[in-house]
Length: 443
Image 1 (tube, helix red, strand yellow):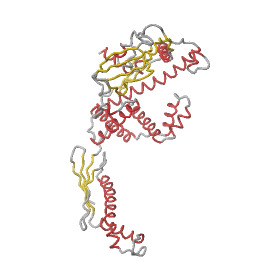
Image 2 (tube, rainbow, N blue to C red):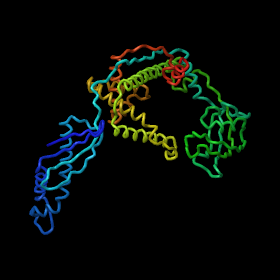
Image 3 (cartoon, one colour):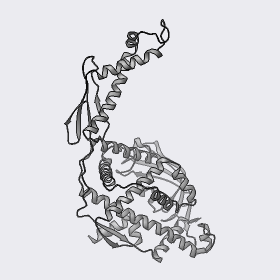
Image 4 (cartoon, helix red, strand yellow):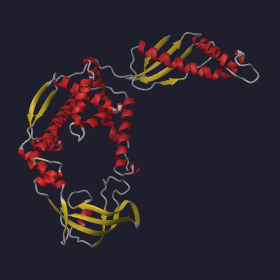
């Protein structure tokens, strides 16, 4: 077998593969002769159909079948011989199957970039250090109170923070539009869950009142079919209610599943949950720093095919998320540009991680996988059921294995670079937006 390699791009390769003359024709003839005893054809006894007749009837299909086998097997041998690592499906130019000529064909594909080693020079990681204070626990308790608000009817006009239940119907140029009408719609004024202009018309309304008003959808509204358009609404106020926060007492603790120990046990349970969240958030922040640092220190030429494939995956995920939210994806122009940078980042990290795994011989050991499943299961009501759910599905288990290997990569990097502690509050660690705002103020 002769193999020539031509670089047609930075990562694109074109192979010309030529097999010895006669190999192909010999294989075709062998295949056809092996078929003769099994062929049944009108006018001939079983197994007695002449070879020439079999060749005339089945020769074309057999030649194509053997050709596919030759391409598959010889391509596999060729990339092994030339130490090439395809990054994409090869584009094969079909061979000319002419009798008496060598079996030759060309194939074009992208290869994975050669990364001899992952550079870690100059990488500095800040490890968040935070303690859970009584104030942090109290803030969580307050949030739990807000989640269990009781709404009491009031006779006064609606004001900010009230809950208003309405029926509404919207139209644009006297025509209804998708999502423009709802009944028994509950909105908390001032929460920003609906358009600000819409909420402003509800301030001062009272139970039983009917309203008519126009609003203009913002130019950057999520649904492009409505963006910038004026809509007319008729609204019937069904009820106006005011929030009443429950007291933090034994009854409240019992509502949250605490059977014994009351508020003190509730606070302890909250602290346990917060500790898990803090540990996970700390890992996430360190991992994000490491990923960004690895990308900055290791610029890589990426296979276009892998980036495009990743963009398709991201696009499909975005579309499915919209569907889950009840939004028609066709009403929003997703395009490809929003996913380019994220796709490039994912592909680059995958290549860097793959190199680290190979060079450091990192594997997802069963003990580590079981330990990770146990950690995740601890936050579920029935840990054993969660564990069975994970181990009962290979795809879910593979996700855990990838997570375990990624954790080992992070640990390895931390052992090679400069790491310093950074004092932070609990909220700053678990809420990146607060930390980001603090950094901007300090800058």
